[in-house]
Image (cartoon, rainbow, N blue to C red; front, side, top):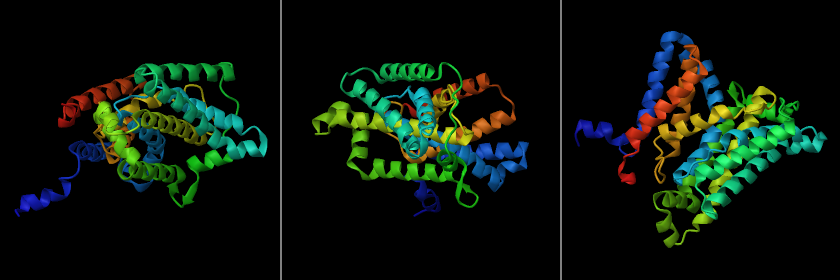
Length: 322
């Protein structure tokens, strides 16, 4: 075995997009260190992981849907609804405080099930049905708040989950993301459901003919996406101490970008969760550098759009999609 073969052997089973994403992360850290030496400090890196954890939880659900060859555009207001409903539930005494987080996640799950029902059973394109449920969620929340900023504060449990510490120096939000990540890796690699998701993404008809209950799998995937979107909103509300109107709007494009940057095919059937983790970190570091450069929000959205198109051109023509 030649030296070159031995050197490249450990990377043969790692997707090129994943390696590219991690390479870009190192490049961004290097570029950031040119602006400030703090970019490479442990405190800064932990802070960035803490910020990334909110996006990471949401992107986990988005990846599951994209692996099916679908899309979930209801993320912004399902996320906002989960946060608002969790904070609202906390106002109903001790029992409300205990049920606040589960209730917020439950609301997101209900909307996820509606999305899944529309896609799996009504055969409505996911782009249409999720956009519709996003508008419905928005209308319900505007009706609930009267169009004003919500007055309910996040309960102590939500704030502790997002900003507290079980391990000294390591924010709980990072641990929550790690737990979600471990669950997603297990789900996608060690369960029949995970294999079914990949099978449907490659060919729904072939998966159905092989005996997979495709409609049930699609329903569950959208339900998980809705639940994780709402959970991401709960964490963000805990971080900010309260929910806010349109707090989820800034997370739709980054959540899609993170999944695509990690090498998951937008057409479904191909991708690894490790790549999504890399994509989330990459997007977060990119946001940080753009903030340091004082780029306006409009400019950031343009950058995200260009990044998504570029990654589609790079990864969207792989063998699995031909």
